[in-house]
Image 1 (cartoon, protein in one colour):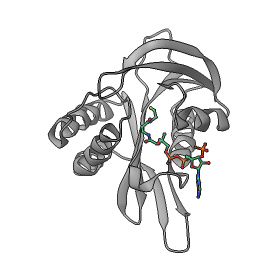
Image 2 (cartoon, helix red, strand yellow):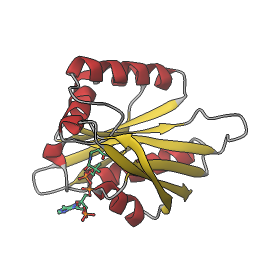
Image 3 (cartoon, protein in one colour):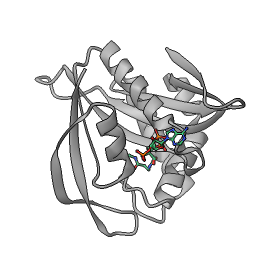
Length: 182
Ligand SMILES: CC(C)(COP(=O)(O)OP(=O)(O)OC[C@H]1O[C@@H](n2cnc3c(N)ncnc32)[C@H](O)[C@@H]1OP(=O)(O)O)[C@@H](O)C(=O)NCCC(=O)NCCS
């Protein structure tokens, strides 16, 4: 399934789910987005300094999960360049077959505030539904713009866990947990 959406007179944005061979073919583009987000101070699991090679390793591991059907990976392309990505974790304990988790919603700083994250989330929810999921959960840094995005998209805010994670520079950050029924 794919969307081709003109963001302006000159820009075409395409959101699509990548199969395992395409994840492997796009490792450099995916790694570049992750490195840029960490360099920009996003709390997305990794501490600075964070190299391109480390980021490639992260997506090599994701590719294995995509191959095993345990995870979906979507990517956003603007005029053919990979500028954003999001994952849906499908493999959860046997008593939660209806539940999925959203992870690593990332948009390169050069492509932000053009609605790309919203398109990625809408497509991720649609893919999750198609995979049989009826409930999604996610967590995100408290007070960030991602929180506004999830609220705008109809997600319910559960609450805040203080000091849950660290920013790349080691400072602690709070996390907000959200859920959405599909
Ligand atoms: C959070 C993140 C994914 C948002 O990506 P994005 O593509 O900029 O998101 P959107 O463009 O959909 O929305 C961002 C803002 O741009 C606005 N916007 C969307 N299209 C626009 C347009 N054409 N013109 C002007 N503004 C626009 C949205 O209304 C939104 O405004 P708000 O911040 O006031 O709520 C991005 O900042 C990011 O990658 N951050 C680092 C990683 C991270 O924190 N990920 C989430 C936690 S897992």
